[in-house]
Amino acid sequence: MGHAFITAGTKGLGLKVTEAFIEKGHAVSVTYFSDEEKANELLENYPEAAINIIQLDVTKKNELKSAIDRAVNAFGTIDYLINNAGPFIFERKKLVDYTEQEWDYIIKGNLDAVFHLLKLTIPAMRKQQFGRIVNYGFQGANTGAGWIDRTAFAAAKVGLASLTKSIAYEEAEHGITANMVCPGDIVGAMKEATIADSRTQPNKETPIGRSGTGEDIARMVMFFCEEAADMVTGTVVEVTGGLDVIHQNR
Image 1 (cartoon, rainbow, N blue to C red):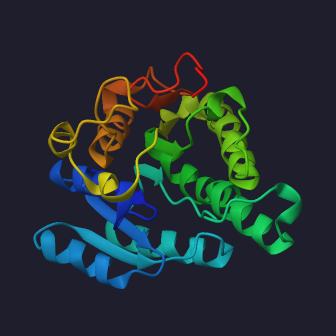
Image 2: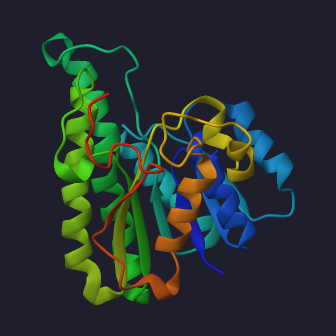
């Protein structure tokens, strides 16, 4: 089986993706930023799985290099690069109220980190003529949408959408695909919930009638990563349950 490198894969949306790779029999190298308890919980829940846990701040270039080296030393070439980590500033504020440090934090964590990870993993993917890259956006990222009071995050993710498409074209000849998944409004416990969980909790705000979950995102990621999904590359897919597809004002 293959080897997946999943940033921020020990909790939230990333956890369901990690679990999906494990359940398919893949080895996983999974990073976490600060919640060591959740990282250890993953190991406890899957004692027989091939799991490599790595503490990582994705805004630090030297730590990215070290993390990839540790992953390769543990399980060999990285076949699946899942850029789930998305540093975020929860306080809503206008662009002019951002400090330079805050802007750098968001851009480094959401855009620069992916650049460095691509540089660190694509050469080996080329040699084996196979690789799957999945990046994360936000609802509307493919349109170049703004996000009021989330300016830095939106700028980084819209840039990442373009980067995803460029890499998809450049690396297609090497059997490497690159796609982006854009979660809808998935919050709180729903990030680690299953589809079955969600169906017991009606949500009137979503056209299909339930909240999105981590499992919904994991299913999309796993599709992108299938060997037979090589015709699907440079694609940005929104997983929103039909929310805002006609851009209706609420």
